[in-house]
Length: 106
Image (tube, rainbow, N blue to C red; front, side):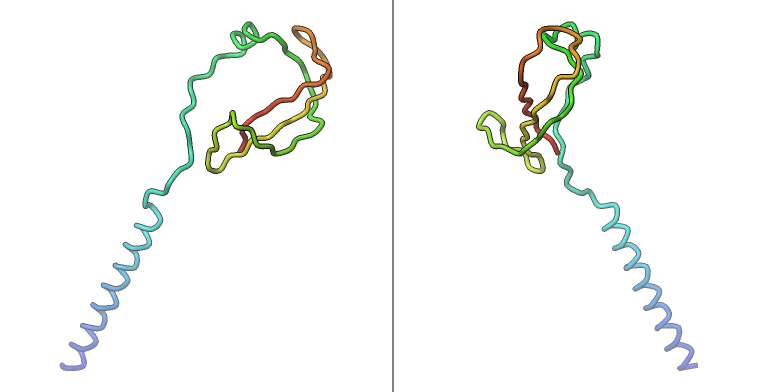
């Protein structure tokens, strides 16, 4: 009788520990994590974008490099890059001889 009660209490303790471990694992898995994101407005649409653009072209990336510019605010997880494009064909407007495109990328 004594042995059975000891075994029973050990089984209850092991079961309780397993239950607590499972709860901790689920909490760790589904706990809210910090997300790096920023608000983006609704899309304009290609028609409106083309109507408002001075220059539209098909281009190839020649080079791209990270640079610093005071105009771009630092955003954690993002970097500013300057990309040089070579114009392949012009769809609208007058092509520049060399175009430098600055953007923030992930």
